[in-house]
Structure formats: C-alpha cells, structure tokens
Image (cartoon, rainbow, N blue to C red):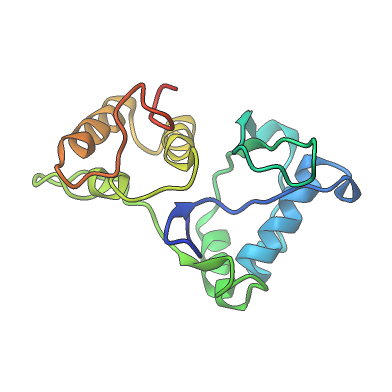
Length: 171
C-alpha cells in the first residue's frame, strides 16, 4: 500500500484514459507513475481483475462517473524489493505518493499488527480492498482477518468503520 498526499492509505491507481487502450494498460501506466522504475517489469491481465464498484462522486469530466476497479496480484519477493528500491524515483513520489507501506500480516497477543493497521485512515474503499486481497491471495486466513477486523473496531481510537457504515466492510 502507499501513503498518499492526503495522509490516507490507498493503492496505486488513477484515471484510465481512452488513450490507454484498456484498463490493464491504464493501470500499468499508473503503477509506473506512482511506484517508479521497479514497476516497469510488472504485468497485469484481466485474470487479476477482482471486481469493481462505484467510485467517488467526483466527476473527472462533466457527465462522467468514476468506477474503482481492483486488481489483485501476488508479487515475488524480488519484484517487491525492486518496487521498494525504486519508489523514491517514481514521477509522483512526494506529490501524489509519500511512500510505500508494508501491511502487517499478523496479530500479536496485545492486538497490535494487522488490527492496528486496519484502524488507520484509508481512502475510499481501500480498507475493504485490502481485506479482499488478503483473503483472495490467502495471505491471512479468513478467521484471522475477521478477528483482526473485530479487534480494530473495538479500539476507542479506531478509524475503522462499523459494518453497514458507508465504506465499512460488507457494504
């Protein structure tokens, strides 16, 4: 994930233009802009498309609405290393993106780790997208994800929305 210019956590992405030719080509352009030279060798295809949902009410152009598409891809350790090493050289580094953030995939006895991470401020549906990706890639078993989310919601300082709230898990 990345820390965005507004202090929220989110995923790389942006507006796909017709000139991009496809959602995947637009995503690859955005990945290179936001992640830098380490993203050059990445490939993303329709098989990694994990769904779409209405985006924000922001209209990029009059009469146009945003649709947020999620692509989920598991990287090899060397691909992740290349991205992390090249991130500071990304064209959008320091502008749209302030830095990359690794997601803790564990819950410690004191409830820290993933539950604390889930309490942070996320842009749009990024928290839900993160939970979906962790589940799809089987990086965190489902029962552990539910436990982490439950612990995150119990914290008095949590930014984690309750189920049924706008942007909350399950909406």
